[in-house]
Length: 365
Ligand SMILES: *Cc1c(COP(=O)(O)O)cnc(C)c1O
Image (cartoon, rainbow, N blue to C red):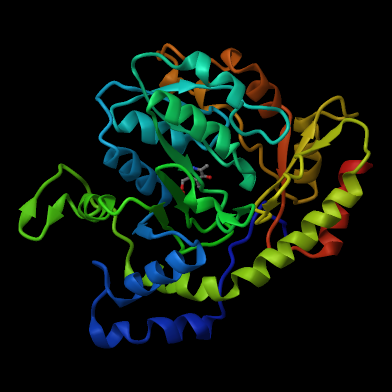
């Protein structure tokens, strides 16, 4: 059996069937039914935030969150190129201009010392990313946002269940987006959420994910981004097992760390202080190692072990952004350095210690 970079968490077949059984009686399959409302309430409790709005995927959650901030058309949004392309697309598709800030080389989140130099009269928001589940410097970012009157919308797709000094990652900024895609720590097959505390946003987000409709009125020009009952039911089941899934990931991560610690030319992401991690990914940076990142990738592939060059390339290096003023990987040298050297190794709850050891043996030999 090949080992993929990830493997989706699922409840037992029986547990899921039990959860969806009543849908055959109600025939209520989508449009904020009982499963949708139940999952929403459970997530508000688990993530410890006043409001959660659910979506059919994380990307549309992020687009809707940005759209709800009513930012000026053509406004500039400071973001990171070291992310999944969804982040950059969400900004652009809202009629805004992504401006790329470099990352730090300790935890690969936005370098907060480089944000202010990018701010001008057109800047209206910051969209940082909690990469690999590493939290951004949320305090420094909020300080800058307050000083210049900017909105902050976090792409927290990797940070489900992470806490900082006991505070939920969902609680920072004006809004945070989570992805519940099949490959994420917590999944609803496809799915996502926006978390926030501003009561006034509830009706805006609820309308925006449903064609802009609010009763018989249509207040916004918007699409369809509703989560279905079958997705919500998967989430209700997976949430029951989440603490145990995270614990199993932790055991695998600790083994990886043990095996790679002190190895020349192998750099691991820093363990962040005051952070309770969700062990979402295990990135390894090959910097001056006896083999390059690409050689390690091929060596693993030959053994049926699929790692991922993640994130690579940077989003400011994609063809669709090449005409944008701030594009170009060379403008974010730290992010470029990491993107060409990083590999995320297989990590999922059911990954065995024997498999971790086998992966490490191949890399170290
Ligand atoms: C997965 C992911 C997304 C997109 O979420 P989907 O649920 O797949 O639409 C956005 N940003 C980041 C950083 C992601 O990892």
